[in-house]
Length: 253
Length: 267
Image: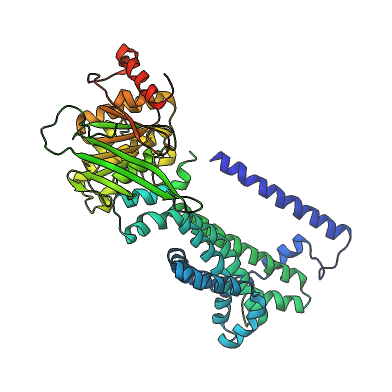
């Protein structure tokens, strides 16, 4: 437990140093608030506008989580099919790579035309960016089943379904969680991209509005809240991982 | 040396438990040329006996064990267990591999019960048997631990329990103690002798350790280098129960010499 506290202190020290240097720099050189507000400016803007920030956080939160959820629900079965069927792998994997190479920012305006200015278009963009890491990591996990375990299952004449449920899928879980942690933070970025292209609400929308009104502190406050949202979602996945995979912790005690 | 040979006393059965005749295995080599891994292996295994396949590393004895287990098909020859041709794995077989192959996400108890789940026979009786097996290998109290919390020797004991949980008639062991240190290894050999006395499962055991082979076996089948052929079948007439002292008997040393000669190590 004390080890956890000690490990938690180091990043805090790092952040504290950056914030202090930043504060001193903005004050010593009298930097304009529009260009770079000081940490205290951002803090006051956060406190003064906390209701607005909280209200605008919800749409971004839902867009990210739903887009991520959709990527899980579609991405994992997709990856399982690609990893277990050679034909599907050859057919779909090149298409997946090709679509992935298209910048999502470039597709976003088209998606807004298709799905409108509401939440749906952001959800779709969040889904698109979260999909790839989940598929790639799940497929890698499915292929990384220890051969010894497969041979053991075969020696007991396990059916293909038993092998999948009892061996391959649990063995792939660490990979799936690794992909999910990347995907959930990407989903937040996807939602913000959507909001930048056109929206009535959300933290991305607020950030854009504050920026155009030259309200530097509020724009930065929105940025800080966005970052907090991403960290919170990442932490949530890490927590679920611990609950679902208690064995990964067991070895370290 | 390929003549039909009866092993460990003359059994009452007309047919031996394991019957292998002219078993050969070819692989296709890198340039398509056939590579002979096993050549005309012939021997019988009496019910309840322990036969060790002793040979240099990579000679094909593991492949032979997999053929017996139905995991790999033979190219030619007769492979029979209990009077039936082996064409695929059978639920009467239990396998222990060189690596423990435990599932890190399952507790020790659930790892032992894995075969029962696959065979749809996991019930309260099976759970009790798993607990008894774990207790018999000295792992009482570790039922709810995870494999990562156990040492290599302990993990291999769990693998042994898992192989025995469904009461197999044939136990196939592929260098199960090969990855363990010398002292743990000797402990495990005593444990195996102990378990054999209780379960009476016929066992085929692969090793490249001469003393291990002699210590635990009723008969040692010495394999040559690739292609694997049987160069000597050594009956081990050391008395049971066996304990570490017999390693220093004159007969034990004699048997080691004979195995060494068969392997071409000593003259």
